[in-house]
Length: 336
Image (cartoon, rainbow, N blue to C red; front, side):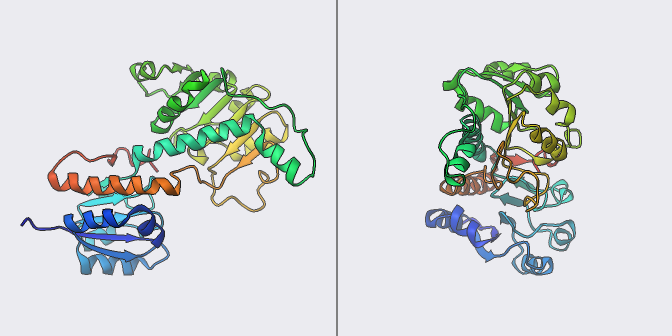
């Protein structure tokens, strides 16, 4: 019988119970010598280091709020060869230098894209249909209509700021609406845009100026920090809608607040520069701003799909096959 590698699952109870059912646990136990520890980032990192030293796992499974595999901890216990992360952003979970030392890393990658695209579509429709405004009128103002005239999504000019996995999944969901879709994503090849039937905006300002709905899904990079600034927002036509489900730092929050105060635009936000959103943020209470608490990722009923991919990656690693949703050091900054 082949030797089973040691596997440590150091996750919160939420991840342990939500992402892995008994069938998946059975598969993990068949594949590995599994140890499960309920831990979160609030635990002392020294305790995590001691756990790794006592367990000496080759495979580490982490999730939201798991302790961080730092350079110093890994140097003390360099046994981990595969880090299977059951969420997306990994900067707080593993140091880049650990990856550069040879530890392979996977995350939920494409598994999450359809769910975020679904949330984005919901926010687009709710924004256009003025759902938040009507909700407030009926619930809190004891009124009936008012709040302006709702719009539909059919045949709208839609701009996608960024054309990664989520944007590509969103394009598929938008097919029934016959939208005119363009993107600003300079590094994406023309062949890929042609494959999805998406046009290219030559500049970011043109994308924002000529779209009735803009979805911000650009990567978090130094180049993209606050790239959606006062000038870009000011180029948007009156009555346009901005939907942010990517990275909060791409949009200059103060510039957005100033623009929203004019009443020209409507924003639907799921992510923010600083999270959680400050209780005193001017964004709160604005009739033309729909707020969600960074819940655009996979819904609880989809967690199990992420768990299945995690187990599949362990199988593939053991068999020497290509991994699904592998995060390389080159992708590290783009995917955090």
